[in-house]
Image (cartoon, rainbow, N blue to C red):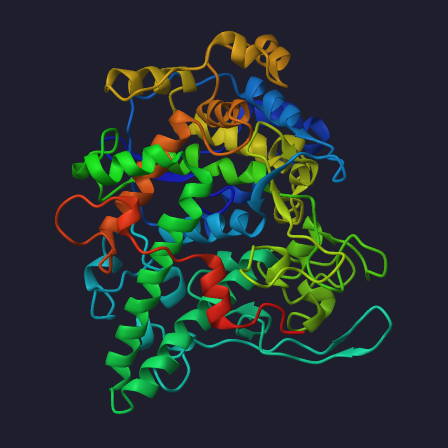
Length: 528
């Protein structure tokens, strides 16, 4: 969801909408001199109009809302200065952090759903849609409804040209077709949030090219195939390969493998099929936000921007936001791309540094970036995301991504982590809940006790603490179960689905396909 757009239609409750910080506390925190601006800039009518039209359900009973000030203190404590030379990394390549964000956008923004035939579903524009994993963040409404996304052939997705740039010695780096398609800097894509940071923007671009690779392959095999049928078949092939990436490559890195196998073979326990036309609020607001702890403050991005000698500069998280239209705004030019019209060619991703590409390691002196461990600490850079500070926000609580996550859980009255763990135990699933000593022994144990949250730990924090006790990967029992059941339901819900055959199917029965396979097929590991 768009950061700060706090609007949830919850089944049986109606519309839940409000400011993250109660107005009285917000005004008190702002002080007299800022009283006139004591509102959240992300509560504007314009932002609310962008909120996804989606219904949510609850997997567990509502919880009592904790004190907002306590959540703010915990959130700020979770965001600490990170020494990138000693910061403990996971074994997960850093690109999966942003693949997780791409998946999130695919399931939480779809305005118009496509039918199996590739046409827009007319009912979806008038009602709240069923969440699914079918890349409509890529396809929009299809060539007829969203022609701006497609080339004139009605089957190939558009891509954009980068602008020419220079290397560290001033030598030219040629323009290449490796930007999102843009008009007046704005990305013309199915989901504008995929131009929120450069990592997800480059990933979206790769999926555009992935689809078009199937168009080329089908056109060569069936030269007389009409454009509409060509598009439908390419779309179906792209979705099926994407779902295999999610189920066989992404999910096993994040979730305990036993949880995936149990859901595939035995069905859903906490997310019953009768609710599968809705999105679990516990997944959206807590469990799937594990990726925020995986974000690095600095990346080795390509041969121009890295942490080694000879770099133009480091690829900081702030710069990854700057080189997008959605979030970037240079203080001097007040424009993204430092006043340029498109992405400079020297900022094209070198995927060898972000994913493990079989047979294609990074160049000498470079290594694959690893995501930070899934734990209760956030990269310090998340204390002041450009998207928030660029909106004129000054309150540290609303500049902090961790505080916003915790306050969001309060807004929708999530149950606390120990309640959810106990409820999972009642279902009969093998599980042990965390003890108070395990919570107290974490890096924020003193904070939890001081602010009165030790016995009622917020669900998001609890899930991260589970993973932390698990060595930082994968998620623990509560997080794994919620994420596995939801993602598998989303695949089953898709009009094109690799799980559409009757009877149980195990993980090994699904042919493996990985990000390495996809990137090798697109064949642009490092274009410049």
